[in-house]
Image 1: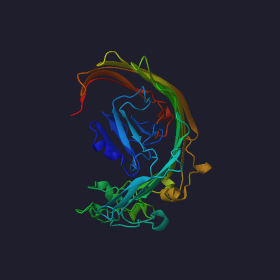
Image 2 (image 1 turned 90 degrees about the vertical axis):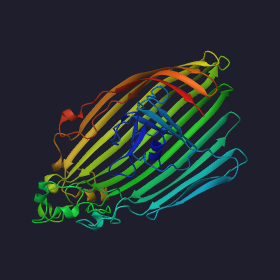
Image 3 (image 1 turned 90 degrees about the horizontal axis):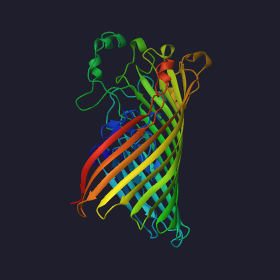
Image 4 (image 1 turned 120 degrees about the vertical axis):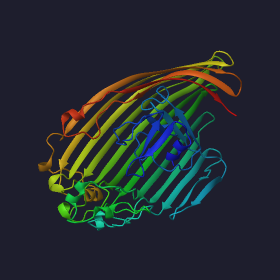
Length: 493
């Protein structure tokens, strides 16, 4: 999975989001964002076949049939651009082969785990139209037993199995390569990934005296503490459901032996639905009789991202000067609806909070390396980024239980329940940045290189993703810059 990259990469850490099996926070060299709200930009950029992946939503996925993973540490503001102050991760999938073949990997494990994944090359014509089909299926029983199954309200409010933290995911990808001529190659791929899983549950390790006010008289709340074997008592119908489409279209045109023009295009559509019970124990009577518990919480998320990059790569001066230059465009739209319920039911605080995000960004970049001698190189680069961002806020109180809202997908706010402060609030702002870099490197021999670099990265400005009920909390915040000096030695042994 993507989270395993951090285990093998010093200076990088991947943190799965609380209460979700599909979200992850990327942390690189001390910078990172642990909130995966779609309008909350990350500090480590994730690219799949050259297409920007965006936020941490759906970023925690199994690596289905990959060729290689490239990890760049520190600010990458020139070639990769925005939101790479901590680094960048590039995942490259295998391209179709002209020869029939493939591979399959099968795994078995504890707790009923089984998984199968692989890829098959299927040439469609004689070295002109090629295809590769990749697939993934993973299943695992729950890790955690729930000693209070089905919650206060069984059925639609707590669907599925009674226990927590299972695995149920599948994915399929079709990749196609058209070798149109000796100088033109077109690659297209489409993949679908789905998760429908029970998330890890919240559990309590201790209680304070307040708990007596919300339990039945004389009850002992310690019976809800986590047991020695890890069993817990929780009345929440926790789930994490995700559906993702990826489309990638890349065309490479060799203008000459030293120049290649490439067009990289991508579209990503994500739908997510999650629910958790934040209080971590079941409440079946007392002040909250008949409700779902103290703090059921969930969200419905939809994002649509379009990415385009036009890139020219080549060399000049008898290959003494190597360069990459181009332009990028990104359009990112998101709809994030947060559904929650407080301890005393709908009349006192069941709520819907919706944030609509719209971001369009473009950039121009160039980076070149000049070989001063056979051993001494100098690299310089510069990127200009411009962004227009918008956010719209909606807030209201409603009497329906939050898990019912999640199950049936209700988002509409009744007119009489609108929050007058955060109803229909819209914010917009523009941001821009110049991010340069410079590096000098010297090769002591074929296996050892020393270098000194100065780089700068840029993280987008924007708007609060979960504002309090006042207008001040929706004001824009400024961009974030990271400047890094680095000296080191690279070698192979």
